[in-house]
Length: 206
Ligand SMILES: C[S@@+](CC[C@H](N)C(=O)[O-])C[C@H]1O[C@@H](n2cnc3c(N)ncnc32)[C@H](O)[C@@H]1O
Image (tube, rainbow, N blue to C red):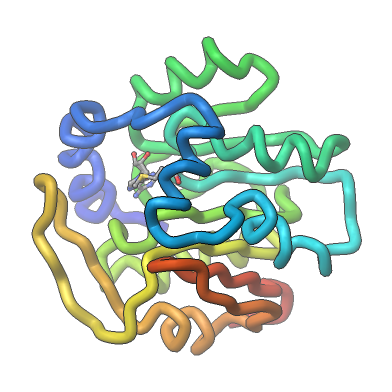
């Protein structure tokens, strides 16, 4: 769980997120961006790891959802699912609620997920992990395990632990596969352009 000190770090970044996001509210813009990052067929590649999940109902959470634009993709693949998003960026959530009233978009304080234990089947985490400080990651993974059965991560591929200052943010890169695999059970790992896609079973992990 995030202490006040911890959530303070993320709260301080909210004005900066509000300056640069939302980036888009159109799924096609996201696909174009992935193509620029070297993906061959973004919708197909993003869908592939999900084939092994044998459910078609339940609840899906996009953690760091921005407007919730990527939840449109999950709506297509899991039409029976109820879709949720959390983010620290209130103005992106406001815009998302206007655009996608069917989504449940909820504000978070940085690391705590404001839902009860076991509430979600799947958490989607896209381009968020590198924004979470190294020292906060174990708590975030514990939150994921607390609230969900599966975790789907899309992130910039990196094989070394380093920080980088860019666009007014600090990026916390690591060998993400090694880091995630240390406590979570990997069901899928693949590369797409400069990114990786990884699916984890959270049950029994820890
Ligand atoms: C690089 S953007 C990615 C947005 C979206 N997931 C996507 O793939 O287009 C990172 C998002 O994570 C949110 N974010 C950053 N730190 C967060 C935190 N600690 N808790 C929740 N959301 C966070 C930002 O507000 C922003 O919307």
